[in-house]
Length: 261
Image (cartoon, rainbow, N blue to C red; front, side, top):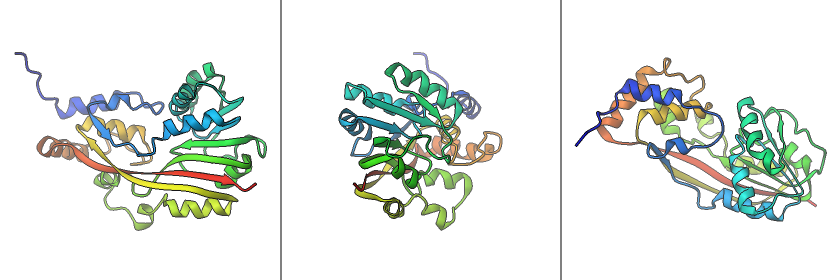
């Protein structure tokens, strides 16, 4: 029987460095990395809300994959549906995916004011925004409108982050705290009606998956390149070879808020 030789460090790193990073399609990781999913099943829950909405905005849509999936499940597109995205490769990818559904994608930097009128939407959604801009979210929601989102929580995947960067300061570890976000949302005039947080097991089965993940999720290890972190990558490869998958934990929270009528 023919046996394939074990992949070398160089082969795995080269493979992880070559994979395109546009969009939020994580299918390449199949068999190489796993991440448990939150119990609230965001994309499926979003589909139900889209079916009942008349005007929806998806903020920081990425490559449009989550909104496209949810619209497919919803079975119809709200009378008004629009998405924003700030990273040019994702703008192009999201446009190609969402335009056939009649959903325009507006190129808008994540820190810029939302380019829409006050009270334009009854539903604003977002999956993993870099940071929620509560005043802008509240401004574009109509009275009684809802913000429905899944956020990244504190110290997410920090086992991996700290493997490369060392222990992070406590204020960094506490960033993206759901209770802090609750306070900021309420200060902007939103009533938080549901807030649920979970930590979820992740496994990286080879160093190629780590390389691709850090190239794709660029804020984890800012400025990450294979060359800059070659010693750490080699150490991680040897650890996985000897001990099995590298385990980390992602942090996610479901955020549902309503604008006061």
